[in-house]
Image: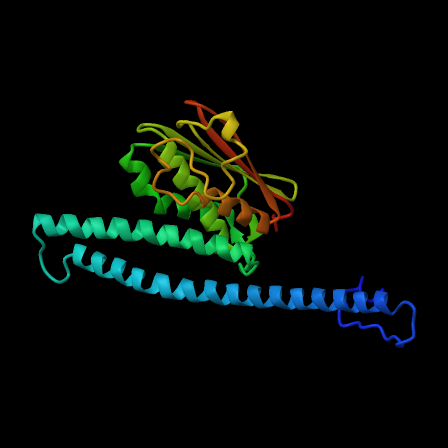
Length: 271
């Protein structure tokens, strides 16, 4: 009973004359090995958590400095730049932001797998967070002349982690923009079903083959197109896990050359 309850410190006593001495010794050895194994797994888990925390600081801090200095130079607060210098500074910014995004994805998946991803729900306006994401990503979709339509059928409060919910939106909207052709369209629909919150993001982009529908949420998956060759293949994996943190699920419908619709259903999220 004690073993079943998780007490692996148990050791059975026996007398040297006992006929069952070999059985008792084997049992004690098994219990000790199990205990040692659990201790080693715990030690590895703690080391992994420390590594993730260390990487988060050690990698992001200098990269943020590079991005910040390049932005300062690009804004010409230290003086004018010639055409070639301006071009190189812009390249540094773009490359730095791209690398930061990849590092963030790798660190996020490490935190999720190590079960150290913090989830701090607060009451917030879903409409406001969605609008913020639309505003932040405006340069990306206006550059491709994509029309973004926001249909807000639910204008109440939900209980969610602001940063995680925002990251879900950024990941899905960025994908929709990336895979939608110029002059295309993206439709965001926010609605409710009693206490459940439903969010849909639909594009009329290149679409996903049916055979790949079950693959795209897996780690490091790259579909055969030019849009995914420079990605980590972690964005949708992380998105799915963040949705699960909010007691939700994500599904998709897609057809080649007709577009993709991601549907997110969050249970009991409405305040």
